[in-house]
Image 1 (cartoon, rainbow, N blue to C red):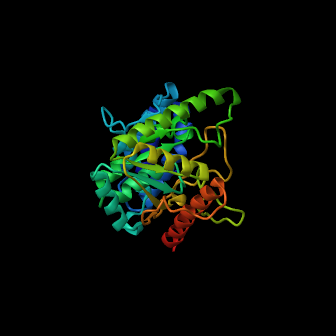
Image 2: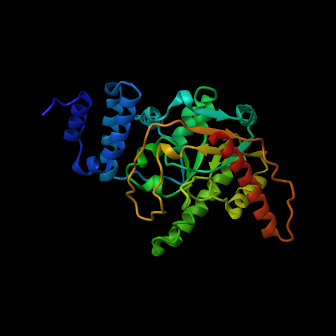
Image 3: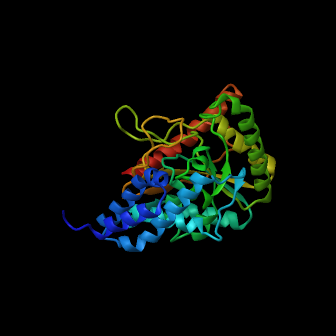
Length: 331
């Protein structure tokens, strides 16, 4: 048998230091990072500390899962989970070929936040690592914004052990998606109460001002269609209306911007919606792209004979803007 490579030796060391369950769950993800490092000519040795920490944190979550509050603020001490998550994902991103479209709108967003006004980013959503992808691409030009974004997060990223360490390094408003609100049925009332508490917290944050909140009005990640294409999933009119009404109630100026993400190949979701936890995570090194559009005029009255029709028209108009941005950043 040939001599093992240094990276194989390191993986043997990691396995010896990991619990069997943590290794079984995390090895696929770690192998993707190793492949990315080797394909890009990076130093695998330099990344071993991050991989070692990942398995330690994963084992800890398997023993005693972290309990997220409805509004979770990223943890920087004693472990800097924000930096850990960026260090782990960065080798998967081809930064030299990744792009951000619409930086002039990001400049406006930064000025509005500095004036203690709010910004809501209405976006599509493609991978669990979208917060890290956004932060990596914004760090060079808008590092403060990269750290300040609050993400409206579903149940999976705060309950699935491999995702929890990354979520601990992210500002989150934790909410149960309507996609999973009835599963299991006996917890529905508890989940609805949790969502109510989260909405009240969000209302207070908007009243304070100076907050930037990312929300995916589709309620989940984009998936391939029957032809194998990936496009932004349609937006839920009720989700957009809720944010619109909460912003108006807060009385603090709130601006709504469309944001398109092309991050799918970084960490594709399962082909179908998976209710149970424990999805396999297969990542690869790829370029990623963001597209910011001009502020959307939420006060503009769109055609429709009923309130429901006007809400749908607004949601469709915002989705169309995100879709058009997505087509531009995909080209």
